[in-house]
Length: 223
Image (tube, rainbow, N blue to C red; front, side, top):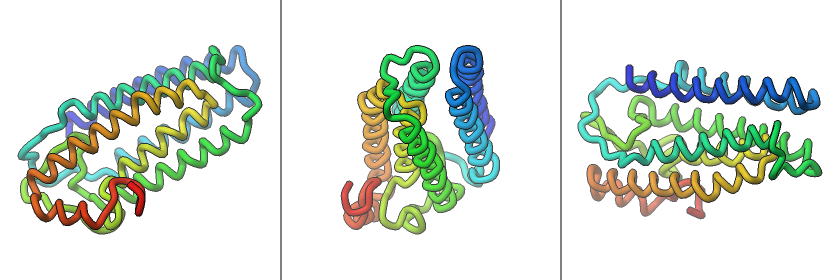
């Protein structure tokens, strides 16, 4: 619990520093539209973070008996933060890969996708209940979740995260940020899924193998 909250605090502190800087630059130098895009995203992002960590997430009732994360969570978080930082700075200051002719529609689509990602993750949190762990781990008396959001796909939380990853470069209309997501964050996500599925096969054996046969990783009927 203490470790998780420390991680949450660090992530939110980094995001807060980035958005304070970006918001200040936007307020000083940019049109009001750009300023309010930054502020609105910061509000939505902060509200979701608070809701997810305090109202949706449930602390486990059992102890972790094995952890095999292999730094996949670290790689995923770092690559995403790099993309977020670049996209935000590119939007308000650099403009290296900001395509103005796509605005404001690409920004609106980005906000819609981000909100959709929050609902997908909420559904995933609700289904996995107290078995969620940001690391690849199993608890005492761990039960394989195959219902709710996990009925047809094995990684609904990663699906929600992936939608959010792509939404943010669109919110900031940063195609360089999107390139970072494609080249760094997506491979980190695929690596994490591979690590997790190997780990689950190790612990649940044939039960997980049968579950894999009747489901897809993140996209129903496709992958």
